[in-house]
Length: 360
Ligand code: NDP
Figure 1 (cartoon, rainbow, N blue to C red):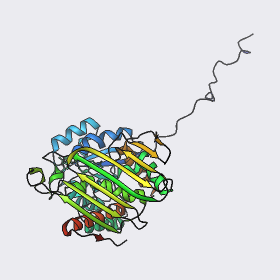
Figure 2 (tube, helix red, strand yellow):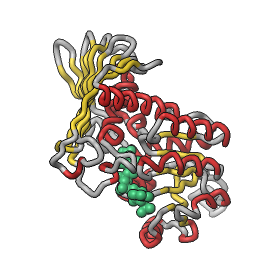
Figure 3 (cartoon, helix red, strand yellow):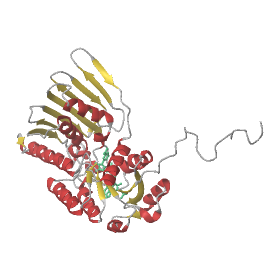
């Protein structure tokens, strides 16, 4: 065989058929984190590494040395660090699309309003604010600014709670009759959660997960609330906020839900749902990981295996996608407002010792 007859060993003009040319990388949404506390440092900032659509571009903090250190770890340009007085100038920063508010609860409304005024989309931590009036103001401001406002209910973006919602709402347990949820921890001082001025308290911090779960599992708004609380006089942690709150909600379909939350118990985060044909139990329901979903009918119990995800990466990617596509998030401001209405009714029930009716 002459050289001219021999076949080429590799075609120079095209790739072999099994080689896939990668798509150009998806456009990423730029995020600024406001408040470098425990949640931001331990959970949210590391979660950016698992995001497909969200990238960290700016930090807002009252402590410049801490912010510089954090910026160095995550490759944030030191010029992209703001403090609480320069925060509004973020309006001039085109790299920031979304602001994530991770401040004490009493500051959520102010920093959301200022962020919206700066023309940015807002992800605000739970509870949305400290009053129904603040929530309404935040929703109105987002509408005026034509920007999205999402509340950081991370469990709506993780597969175990999503599966529980599907099973409850599709009637797989039959008619839902009773639900029970517990969210408790032993909160040590000093802590924003123990300060009334900063919007703390077990109901606002952990009890909100129980009542949010009752709302997302039933898909209904409660019509009646009763509640009680305990604030021990001999424990200095509870000078300003109760230690324990327990409440019962009645829903229009007749489902009765009982929730309790505490800053004085060892960690316990779970719920049970009982329907006419079956029940489900979600262990570690409100934790960052470790969810276990057990389903029961009259004959047997089984555990459902699902692949866990990082809750924070999932919610940040969801919101980034909403910002890119213009579609509304699964947990907009209206969700935070609905919870604040129930929290307010629970507080009234505790104060008056009476059952409080809620208008739906
Ligand atoms: P931390 O107390 O750890 O952090 C709050 C940060 O806010 C501080 O580090 C500080 O950041 C900033 N800050 C500004 N002003 C004040 C002030 N007057 N007092 C205290 N801090 C101030 O709280 P967490 O990170 O635990 O919680 C923050 C928010 O996140 C709360 O709304 C909480 O409900 C929510 N959260 C949500 C969780 C979830 O799973 N979705 C879990 C945990 C909390 P800097 O020094 O940078 O200014």
